[in-house]
Amino acid sequence: MRISTALLIIDDESQRSLLESHLQKLDIQVLACDGVEEALEKTQNIAVDISIFSAALLQKDGLAPFYRLKASLPEVFTILLTNESYLANEFNILKEGIDCYLFTPFNAISVKATLLQASSILRLRGDLRREVDELRHKRRFYENVLNRFEDAVTVINSNFEIIYFNDAFEELMQLPGDTLQHSNLQEFIDDGFKLLNYVRKQLDAGKNVRYYQIALKAPNNELLDINIDADLLNPVPDDDNNIILVMEKHTLSQDNFTQLLRKEKLSTIKLLAKALAHEVHNPINILSGRLQLLMQSLNDSKYHKSFDTINRQLDRVAEIIDKLRRFNINKEDTIPQSLALVPLLEKFLNEKDTCQNVSYKFHYKADEKELLINANQSQLQDAFDYLFRVIENIVSPGTRINVYCRKLKSFSQQKVLEIQVNFKDTQTNGDFLQTIHDILPHEKHSLLDIALVHTIISNYDGKMYIETLVGDQKTLKLHFKISGVKIDTAAQKAALQKTN
Image (cartoon, rainbow, N blue to C red):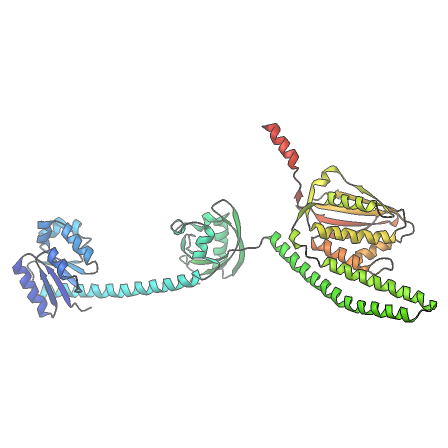
């Protein structure tokens, strides 16, 4: 870098004049001052490359004026005009503010050498400044890009220390940036060292890390399920490689995913039911109208039996349409619902027992009334209505239908509540239950009813089984996953009052 302007702050007029002449011979503009105050005034509107400060002024006025000058001209290259004895005494004090020294007595050669040193250092400073500015520009650019991401992004070093993060990461962590900067990421992850070490080994081995699930610790000690994607910033086998992590802020838990899948499946079935009901309803109305006109035109009694048969079939189709429409009623406001199945089924069977030509006997243990399942109460009632209506249409009048409820013993973590439907009827073929299980047509029941039973039960992870008992007798079994146990609020309050 070529030096164009120099500031001289020297109180010795002879030294100032001599140095000024040497600088002018090198085509350098000179601002000559005998003190700091004058220097500050002259440099208000003029850019200066170097300043030469006399050590005699430091001995006379102290360090305060010098530091004022440095504060005003922080980028100016500073040369201390001194002798070796002063340098030895004040080196430790001045080393932070002085860039180089010009010793007295000086001559043209020593001045030129000092200026060459200053020019070289200024050129390096300029290059460094440009590099820093470019890096800052690039950092701002990438920060703006990453801050556009909805997902949280952070960069960690080989020791898992956080060296960068975007706004979404700060929002996800619910902590100020000063706290996150240079913190160790493993402190915010459940079993953090083990998981991050595994991620690092996978990346070092050249393997992808995608949708890897971790549990992030929130400030309130809540664990958040997060999916991460990880990559090496510099894919070279080097311990100093940094890792960039992209975290999905919204992760579906297994329960939420099952619920979403259930709603999508149910929505599709409802749409199909609505379409079928609509498409069948219009032709049936037309046929019914034409039949009425035909009955008025043909009064002969020989046609009455045929007309009655056609009417019954039209009524049957109308009933099917009604079922499809009922199933299409939106009941998603009760999904998901944790409900006690035994009291629901007991109430349902008691109501049916008063108005049907069959009798019901419900068997269960007291503690089974508290077992909960995840289901839609309205749709489950519809499923029981379809199922028991089919059974009632098959069995002989006066048949006793036994319904058993029990919690199955299981070594697995998931417990199951079983509903068993049993009846003895010599007139009913045991293969009838198999037609229910396999959704096969039967002359005495509606295939649509059975299809709706299967649809609703399977929609809540329920299963239907047929089991052969002693004497080739078959029984129908329904299995539902137990989600919990109902808490007796009254008993809980009584216990609490007794404790108090």
